[in-house]
Image 1: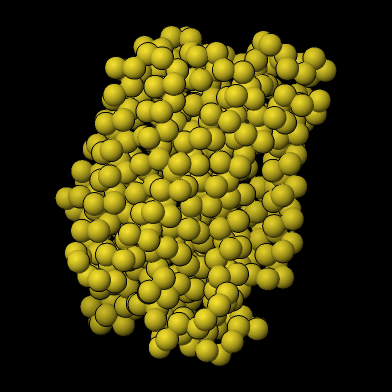
Image 2: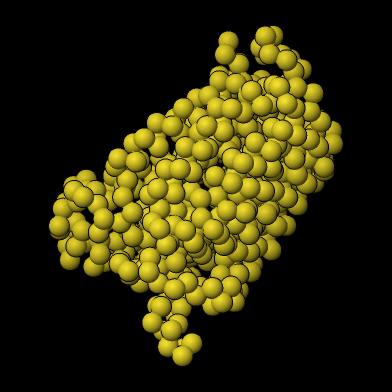
Length: 450
């Protein structure tokens, strides 16, 4: 069936899920700039006390969100498959927004440990968002638009970071101080929740105003996604023993380690090693995600072109993209040992983070390949287990970097990230797949069990 012309309902839904990812990551990554201002002896705002948190405590704070995130991604994926993603996303985003607004009060009155616990609660809520977005994409994405839609929607995670870093830097240095960082991101989350409640929809079949032509176009060009997937029995045993699922988990583990080590620690690295002030820090911290966001567009259009022309298999396409992302980033981090001036260091870190864009057309798009009917659950399991590295990465960095002005300690942390990148992607290259798994079809699973 031919593609309907113009801006359609599916594009509106994609825009909403893109913005949900942007806010999701704005709310979780605002801490990387805020914590520099919260603990900086320069006292950017004399009306706010300096929080005397140690490097180890800050490392724990940076990773604390992911303890909650780890616990709810798999349940979030399962529930989004069974109940639909709309109301799960609404409640989850609203909770995230409220917690963000309360963060300054908790930090100023109850100390670092209570602040860490609030980040854990924030993670519990955020664990429902990304798997629900994957479930939403499985229902709304035609095959011809799959790579660029998935890549653009999921690149909202980069856009949220890009937008947050420079704005957070200016807010921290403003008369409102660092608490305004949390207030702004939280209020944006409340606004999104209200819009989503009235405009969002679980699927084309349930949307009240989509045109018949567009609904038919989406339904007939979805591959492996049943309109009755909410009533299907979940093939837990087959999912948990699937080699491609575990290979994907390894790729997500390495992706999260490198990404969150760099995102959460980059501001501190630039501040303490090269002496950038908080405003410059925010702008420079935003530069790598900006480049990554642009590279996502490049990777997604190239991937769609290659896949539509069938130059290579989808499996090989996914592995090449992911290898550029993770092996390329590993090489970039290792090369940090050979540069000493600030400009070269920023360029190398920017290249390392920008190359991770390949993961958006590699491992991050892979759950929809393996099982369109259980995409949210696959994403929840693999990304949830992979989130353990987002806990370990910043925490271990906090223990490695005991002196934040010591460049060599930072290099050791970068080497660890490079090793994790290499091992995780190697597992994906050897054992990953982009073929729809047989257990995606509930009837085949039932026949085997009889």
